[in-house]
Image (tube, rainbow, N blue to C red; front, side):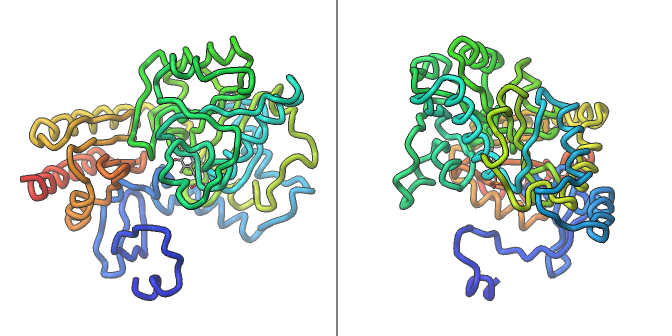
Length: 392
Ligand SMILES: *Cc1c(COP(=O)(O)O)cnc(C)c1O
């Protein structure tokens, strides 16, 4: 840790842990201490750490073909794209390496589509306050949290923000400079904020009426996290553009930008590219991961376990008045506290449970989707003990 502080740029408030091994829902530190991991790489290791099928797919590909330029065809990317198209609203996929990167692609695609279809002047993207779309300039400009802009201004022109889950505010913000609306189906980093059940139907209707593209950032909430393969399936709507990353290759870096044929047609050779995008190793890993994540029985189990965790968290709330609200869907949960949450994160870590705190006072839990019922029980028992210790 001291060596890291000498040579690594100081961009993270890291927990004082050196992790050396992971398996399923557990990770181990360099002293051999075991932890139940309810961070899961921040919704990345949805199948648990070091999943054998993902590892085998990547390993086989590593000794077969590691990388070639995207000026050639390779098989893993085609097979993965076919799976994503079959499993979603989309007709076409563009691959990159991270969430921010595919959100950049989404912003570029939306603007270019709108330019071709409607001419100049329609470039603005409306997104939500408290949203999170990534750290590159485009994605950051679409992120509705000024604290992340500090020192980097000016942000890109052509972005506007409205409160999440407020259809009136969104409707009022639309004028003839707007080309797209970009939203997370459930806000993750912003504090696990859920929309009301009919919000996205209203957003979809607004987009249809005004000829706007709906971009859904499913980077955190997608890929089974909420108990459906894609979170928008809860709302009975489909977007025009969707972005995926985090859990896509279960720990290897990969992002995907998905769109309908009509919208995707705005990208032609030369308009967008990624050197590493859809590399054979990550594509093979993602195909193996998606095979598990998309199984209906797997997704049903996520919903069942999510309901179980919800019940346990409500019980916890009844004993710990510091908990103001329990919010979540599937296996994506937040506990909003009346006080700072950092002390609770430490207390849980000292008791062998890794959790995360966002927005200063929202305890966020993103267990691997393969979590077992007895592991949920264990986590709830640790939480109960930690709450007693920190908020007596
Ligand atoms: C994590 C996240 C991103 C950014 O992904 P990176 O891979 O870190 O660039 C974008 N949107 C959402 C909703 C996220 O949770």
